[in-house]
Length: 188
Image (cartoon, rainbow, N blue to C red; front, side, top):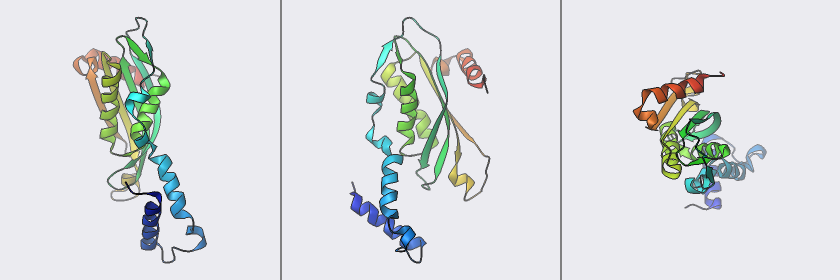
């Protein structure tokens, strides 16, 4: 792993590539600020799904869909280092245990705050739910706008990419999927 000083030097090198005078006043502290912002933007590397989902509660016989929708997230595309952001809908059907709703949002953030692609975020959140709370089924649907599509290349401002991962009853049973989609669309 590279240390902070080396990382700041790398930013200085990039500034020299972009700017004819990388030592001007406005850029003087930019390398330090960039690395500090990276520490926050990429804080997902410091977290583990087992810790995020460690606090569960007795489901008390509840066997319906638990859905947290419209979870805002921001991430960084690993291909172009461009931002992408959107919302995730995370659902599961408990067997014995439920998890606090803030944990679902934290799980999405944990994965989003890494160099990523949208497909991996979607699959990883579903895999973690399946592994750590063993639900009857879980589903993750992610909708996002990608900076690499908006400000470079094809420059399509309104394109939204949607990915999904369905496991257990949400994969096996079309009626469970249909109920989930109805719940996601209600209230919009």
